[in-house]
Length: 466
Image 1 (cartoon, helix red, strand yellow):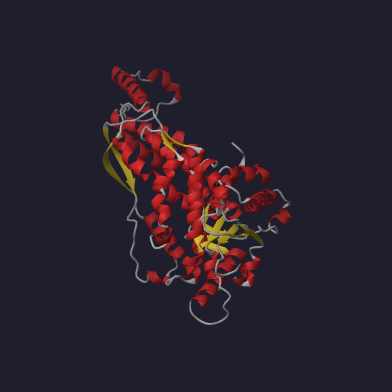
Image 2 (cartoon, one colour):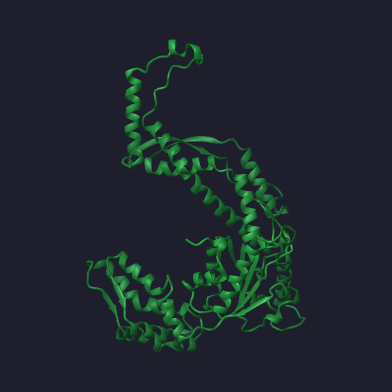
């Protein structure tokens, strides 16, 4: 596996090519932005804080791969990633501070990532501890009689030899320890003690006067003060293993260490993707009331977050100076220049994504690791059937999707989902009732034309159908 920290821009583009067709310029820009993070971390200490990320504005119609590029980039970098819709901040009921929620979500995502990695590190030790608790519930150990410890000089004289019952108990426990390890007793029921925290919700008078973070912190503090109670539950060993594993993992993980690492990861590697940013542009109108005032207000609320500010989260203060922001929008009605100048200046890299051609659709159906044809093949294999697409059939599917996009509304690669669903739904409905066959289902050009005839015929009507 490639080391995410040492990937060159060329290698990052190659990784993105496995999932996304075309859009080479956009891939190159995000690859450089990702590599710049590694360069910044390896710069001299006095310059490190001065180097700020070049945020990116992606311009392109829906379905051309804007979100997918950002999402895959985060996966390659193993970085916390959050996607928000800018238009939601214009809705009634939102206030300026709500934009900080995206940073809180990023901190939450970062904590989950660090916790998951720490869990993997202690999983083996936690599993052994959980198995010992299960073993104690099945075959309780025979303890020696309680008393004072024997001094070392008297150990040889006074040491009691284990009696037959103790030896038998230990041998039985060893046998059952192996059975538990090999999961031979998963359905047997046992009674175990499970820790329960206090009530999760505490009502407070005047809670509406407190902000979200203060409420969360107070809630956490009150829960910490509540006495932890043990509750006896009767579970199968399989269920008990899951519950106990979580408890033992929680004991082994230092949450303060997790929070510190997560905050650092969010600040230095976090990616926030702001979609539909064109919906908060003013559309070229100056002055006046109505929704445009709200839109410009949202831009001004976003500005300090993108510029670099400190946001209070329940895990600690997150500084947004070095978070990479990627904004995206179709900009059909408005233009990037309709954004307020201060916000435009915070997205210095502008990339225009190309609309998808018929040839792109053919490649999308065949090349990516998660290509739609491969997804449907996996679905049919689960039922014991094999499905094959010949080259002419893929051309026909691509042509149909391209034509519908051209005549109705261009929704990019998402149109392929509509077309493939229409083509294969009947097969997906019928195969569970049929016996598995070694004879593959062959999708031909003629079959595609027959199945999609109605879809192609009703292009004019389809714009009125959800």
